[in-house]
Image (cartoon, rainbow, N blue to C red):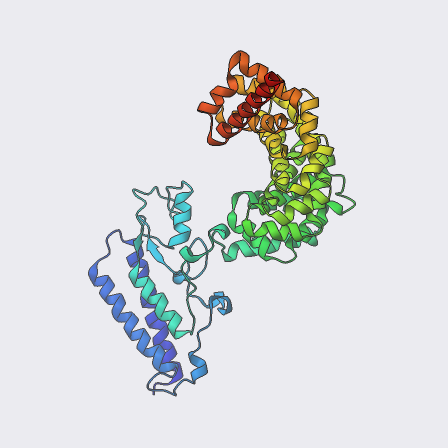
Amino acid sequence: MAKPGATAAAAGELKNELQRLVREIAEEDDGQIGTYEEAARVLAALKQVTFVGNGGPSGTPRSPLANRRRTDDSMDSASVPEHFRCPISSELMKDPVVLASGQTYDRPFIQEWLNSGNRTCPQSHQILPNTILTPNHLVHRMISQWCIEHDISLPPLDNEQDEDKGLITGKEKNVLDGLLQKICSPTSVMEQKQALSELRLLTKCKRSFRALIGENDDAISQLLAVPSIPELSADPEVQEDTATTILNISINETNKKIVGDNPQAIPFLIDALKAGRIETRSNSAAALFSLSALDSNKLKIGELGAMKPLIELLEQGNSSAKKDAGSAIFSLCLARENRARAVSGGVLGVVLNAITDRSLVNESLAILALLSSNQEAIEEIAETGGVPCLLSIIRESSCARNKENAVVVLYSICMYDRKRLREVGEEEDSDGIISRLAQNGTSRARRKAAGILDKWKRTLRLHYSC
């Protein structure tokens, strides 16, 4: 058997030669067949030397336990040869492909680079004549062989990865760890604020960072601890950055439950909704809307008192803030328990004013239609001039969905209030707007309009029979 020193020296020479050949193949636009064949011969020779040196057929047999494959998580990244690493992720390539520049990358990472609109090579910065990705079979075989020799199992390809997580790299994990360190143990308040601002930007732009924070058990609590620090508790930028980062994090579907289950998160957003500057309030409302996609979060948000400050924002905010507040209120009211909270919080007057002013018609009508199953809401709408407002929408609007929502509310009113039914019936007799809707509206609008007409006709028959 070859001496260990001689084997190591031979393996080293072969590896150097193989690296040279791989670089030559990657840098050539059209690889020469002879180069590929020479690389294959060197790879075979290296396999023989390494396999024998490590106890292959000519050495001591491996134990059954030695044949167990290590996973990617247990692999020491420092031991991975540089030419096996993706230049973007710095991790072992699983699906190496050659770009038009001749550089080799891991497919999912270079594909994401190209999908983002980039048309240059990340390494050479040259403009690409095309975006064709050619499988680098040689490098793939070399990586597979290297994994076999080091008892490493390649992770599954990223097309099997959760789409919501994005492509998480080792660099990004290190960046997040560094930012959380600065947030938790800063050398100065300014460093803490800068780290928070950078985290806000990264969670906005990168799916991977949103996923990473959700996977870190302490990250959200560490983030929410910042606004409670005495030096920063009154800082509007800190409050806005924190609220916006929570909004960004909550976009990740898995994170909605994680954020909702954190005892600090929803109360912080509600406080920011009450006292923050308008951008902070708007982003807090958007975060509550995002979190409310989960039924369990809908109930928590309602119970913790978010409805009234959302209604205040719907009334007082700018156009963007009103839309965020309206979306959050609508989503929360999908839970029946929150509808009474919305009515008692004054939402009906606010949305009726918005419809009258034509300032937030779509969202306001959707909220009214959702609340039309609440008897208290129907009575208040009828008593505060809601019927003429709704009839004007049916008469004037060009939006089929708005007409539908308006007639849904009118139907609920007409089913219990004869006085309002007469008001609608008189409008129908003079202009025929309900009949037109019964013929040309959406499926739901036709049903509701037909129901109103039937009720009105029966009322008239009863009146004349008396």
